[in-house]
Amino acid sequence: MSKKVDSKPGMLFPPKTIIIVGAGAVGLEVARQLTERGETVHIVDDQESAVEKARMQGFSVERINLQADEELKRVGIGGKADVLFALLDEDASNVFLVISARAIAPELPIVSISGVHDTIERLHAAGATKVIDPYRISGYKIYERMHRPMIAETLEHTVFGKVNLDIAEIHVQEGCFLHGKYLDELSLEERYDLIVLGVVDREYGDHLIFATDPKQHRMDSGDVLVVIGPEEAFRKFHADLNVDGNEQP
Image (cartoon, rainbow, N blue to C red; front, side, top):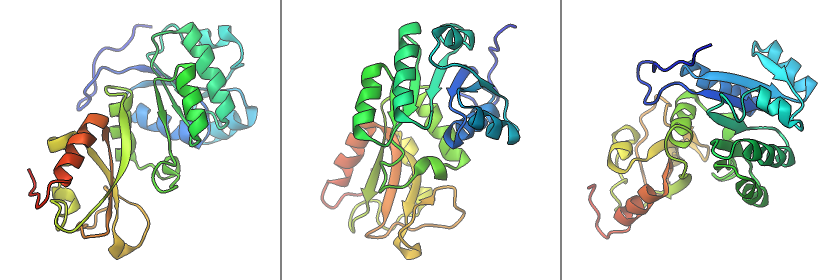
């Protein structure tokens, strides 16, 4: 079968062949979003219960032996796969998978997930290109709260472009250029290459409200803006925020 080279309308990069290892909630959500973007996605897992549950939800999932290099090669690692997602439920399993995949495919981009600092370091040491910490923002389980626009933007910046993506909380203070602005008029993507994930709007409580929420959210002192972007963009953004009497650049 020949590989697709045409992009879907609105896509910045040609479609990729992506292997997702892990048929849990995270893996299935990522698979769904990537499939909607036109990517070729192949989901695998080694747990029969996870495979059956995913199939009951309508996903096509293959059960393989993740400890066998030949099985990993057969599904495309070291071959047709352009990107690997290591999204198993157990951190130790992800570490082992990353080690095996990196040995097979030294240049393959590998994205994994972990909320434990030590495991994040081990995954990087094992060869992961990017490790996403879903608990980074005030203990929220981001992977359980992912909305479709956020998934698409995050993957676009981690897998299809930049791998130095970071997530940060920006506390709005009176006098900074964020104060008094509405969420939809910040234009942080154009000005700083930052994507607004959402806001903790104190008027509505202490929970994270995603940027796709239809309400108009005005930034007031005490609110928390949750932003995704590359490290260098945050440096410029924080420099502007720290200027006394700063006006929006």
